[in-house]
Length: 594
View 1 (cartoon, one colour):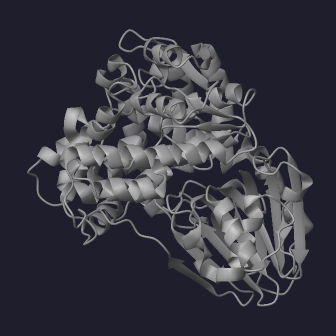
View 2: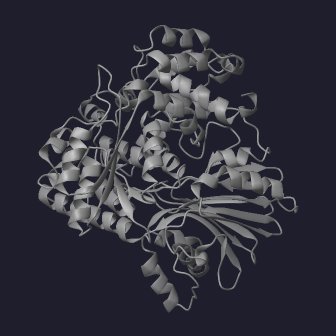
View 3: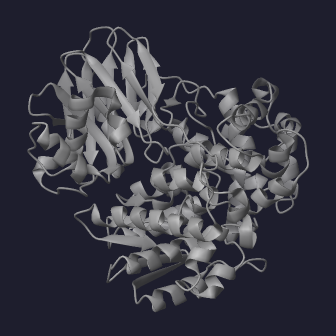
């Protein structure tokens, strides 16, 4: 797990050292253990390392193959690298380390572009072929690891976050109206290849790219999720067994492929509690678990310790609890926003940032339950869509989209109003022949597109800000493929995540299984009062906000007049959404004006 960056010149000039230095600084927190850079005429590759596998100097990056034809920078973990290593040794390839990085570079030497189809894990990497003068970049199937890029007349630049690209000073910071529409309609989700900034793009999950010094860029999809029933019908019990076994394999892989201890982020919900149970079932002892809580508000508890504590006690874990007061949340908020590659509305982004700081003092790797709700239909809106008789995309939008197009146009000024880009995106993804039913299509859309730029990105950003690697077994692509073929009615049982609840029964306390769905409570950012309200009001009323001219002032005034009355369909605060977006822009786009 690391930070990477690099560039390929289109004009024959060497990439400037100051550009490499500025990019390296912007990804430094992702890799505190080592750094390196490589130059070869038109190309520059750079790396910041977080040592997880093969902690020795042999794992240093950029890394070359034995012939020195290929050079790689890599971020992620390949869980099947021991098996691939043996296959490649049998084919005559030489190894000088025990790292998964060297397995990727030899796999590319052996199988070329098709090597990505053999990789099981989370990854973003770039490989330079000095003989063919070709830069190859790839991103994992589920988009767990980030990979941003930007193109100027002089070259192609890439990095683990957009801040590294903007730090070069080569790229404009104009807001993309399409990205903005998605940002405010899909609770901060801007699907790849777009971002909020018009000049910055994202490599799409399950895609690879080839870039050459003459400026040609070609991309290709190497994996696609199919959400259809298997040829041979299975009973509910057979589905439970199959999914248990697949999830167990995913958990084991993410435990054993590390040369450092692995902990668990234990929220008190079903998903993380089940991970603890399966780790115990796999024979893991001395499990380290970590929970965080916040101050209560009259309407909502600020912690879920009453649910996480019994799980920790049942499995005698080495449990750590952190209770964060509200004044610390507000004080530390600027740090968390500074760690966001893109603006994130989820209130638990701040929670993950503060939790990761504490966890990183004890371990370098954790397993986390992200993805279970999307893969196994755990959220309340899936059942609403399933029961709905509404026509077309309204069956999705009326239960999910934060702002209808009319409200979006009321939210922003005239310069940013355009077509209903979000409705177009939804239609493109739900009108597919790769799904058996409407809900199959919804879950497929969520798992392959929406989740990538909401909980997955959020967890990656907030953990990597502290040099902590988060592994997400519920997004193991083999488990996801199996779950996608499972009938929706089995997932929707027991008010959602029916299959997981039946697997969990007897393994974790019934109170955890049968409780209402939790949402990582952080009440102060939902029920906006006192200092939190003042922070949001000051941000939106600031000179910089007014001069930016992004928001319609009448709309903002209405939010500020009734800060606790304006919520999205998914119960998000529209005031918080607006304030966070403006504050992120102040932090990242015009920081010189601070």
